Structure formats: C-alpha cells, structure tokens
Length: 96
Image (cartoon, rainbow, N blue to C red):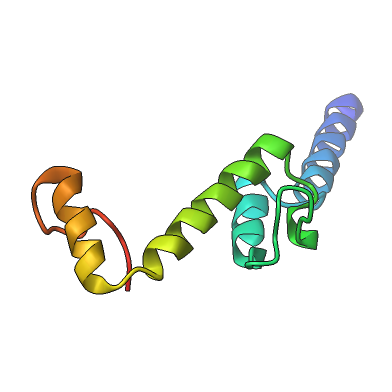
C-alpha cells in the first residue's frame, strides 16, 4: 500500500513538474508569430523565436512575409490576384 501511495505521489509530482516546464510547441510558434516584424531575417530572429527549429522559424517568417506583402497590395490588384487564384472574387487572397 505504501508503495502505491509513493508511486502515485511521484507520478503527480512528475506531472506537475512537466506541465510547468514550459510552453507547448504550438504556444512557442504563436509567440514567435506575434514577435515577427520587418526587421526579422533568416539569421536575425526575435527573442521569442530563438527556441524554434530553423525550419519552423523559416516557415513562420515566410508566411509572415507573404501575408504582409499581400496586405500592402492595393485592393484592385488583390482582387485581380484573387480572381486569378480560383476564378472568383471570394477572398481567397487575404488582405485589408
């Protein structure tokens, strides 16, 4: 009986310790996305992105760059891209 109680206490302590150790990968990526700015480059990472793998960081950086490029295009040009994307003006190309 003591062994079971000790084992249960150990498992509870281990679970508490591992849950307090840090953020999940999804949380780390979300923090990195929030930290990206036009000064971020392949080698100049924001502090919030330092704990991501190079591939994960570059993927987020590229997505950020594409989104911000599209957002900067005038509406008429976004509509033209949208139409050429799938034959309809349906917002498939995001932007302001």
